[in-house]
Length: 108
Image (tube, rainbow, N blue to C red; front, side, top):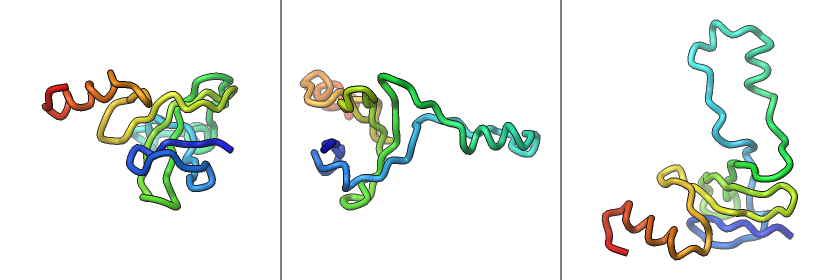
């Protein structure tokens, strides 16, 4: 079973989450000028890479909050997460904790 670390609730089973798919997809600015094919590509076409991939996840059976995870699609290892308020943080890293405190204006 895949364990996913919710940034707010801690490690939980994958069954508690819903995957929102590929992260960081920019919505086209002027959608009225897009062809049907371009609009369809934006809505439905996604990458399916082998290796490191960024995904959106929602903790549906917990805090119901969205976050982004960086996951290796081969090993299923979640390498880090990003809330929508903070940049990517490596899990279990003292350096990431110190960086997070520094961003909040606190001394490490």
